[in-house]
Length: 170
Image 1 (tube, rainbow, N blue to C red):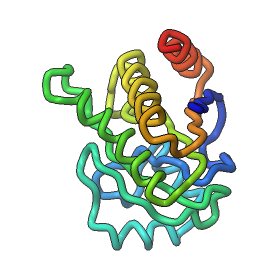
Image 2 (cartoon, one colour):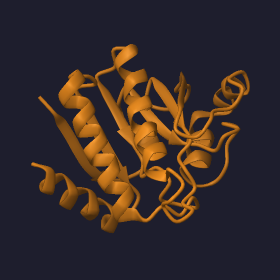
Image 3 (cartoon, helix red, strand yellow):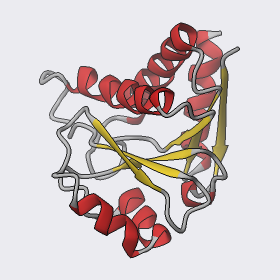
Image 4 (cartoon, rainbow, N blue to C red):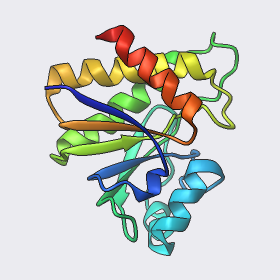
């Protein structure tokens, strides 16, 4: 069964097996979701990230959750929007697939995603949401793991975009 949920809230408070960090390529913290996750997880997260050697766009790496309610943090680097003609859609879809692949490898039952690349990376929200929902749904239909995916939105208007997109695919 495909279990996709959408909620407004703070991803650092999610009681799931893994939360996804929309990170920069260094994985050493930054602004937005990345900074919030690093602050909430504590200095152990930074220490763990320092051993990973960064992460290319479209890929993902996993660490412990440390002081977070989530057991793990899956770090992924979304594409910077450059007009849509430089493979941004493929890179963004890869972020979601790679995070889900890591979750499945670890046999996790739940994962929470932020809106990857929609902040300072400038990805148009409606296009990013369409990619996120369709990629996650396709992965879950093929792999049946993780069992639950939560899209955690910072604002109500973003959650409304996710809900519309999910309804359109059902």
